[in-house]
Length: 263
Image (cartoon, rainbow, N blue to C red; front, side):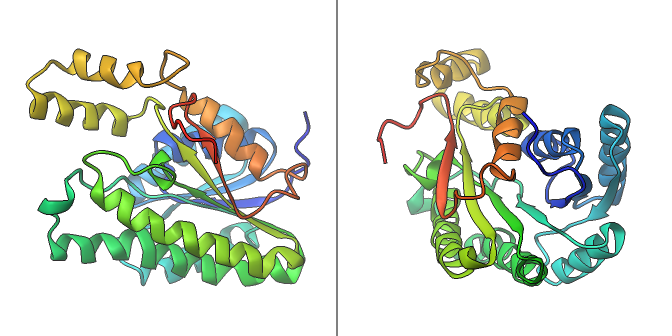
């Protein structure tokens, strides 16, 4: 299927590896010009070089440090300069530290609020006006299955991603008339470095092996396996397509059926 986005321009945050990289690759395979960011210029450049070699697309690497909201102004300007504009924005960031609600420290909460809420809203606010002016745009947030059902031992993720859920819905309602869609894509059970590191944490906490911790996670997935990051990337690219132009204000799951509720 031709997704109808060849020649569009995308900024993908947190794209040096994992789900961000898989999303950038899926878009690049559709002929989208890519600016991908990482908190490290070297990692961004390495990922951009790799992606360009894989797809033949135009790819540039930029610094995008979500821990510093002011860097989002620099990132937005750099992306527009490099690509000539941004039609597709994929918001992404590293997963926060694991932890339980009663152990949450205010200083950690405030720090993560900047990374997961302030910076993400800042970059969105900077780039959406250009999409509105062009009467076409796609804003996609890479979230978590915790957007739908709070996850155990992930209080920071559950709390702060909830703010983005309501922000994204509000934004979708405001700019849908301008041809700009806003959606969240919620992974669950996709095998990434984050999945491995949280499984290692579970293993230490529960006194079991890493393999046993991974097996416990797989046992909660009706499909009986982990998802591949490229499966996630394909869905993300479709949500940025012309064909998905009437889909907005929703959370789209890529979790192998792991979340049990229907809505």
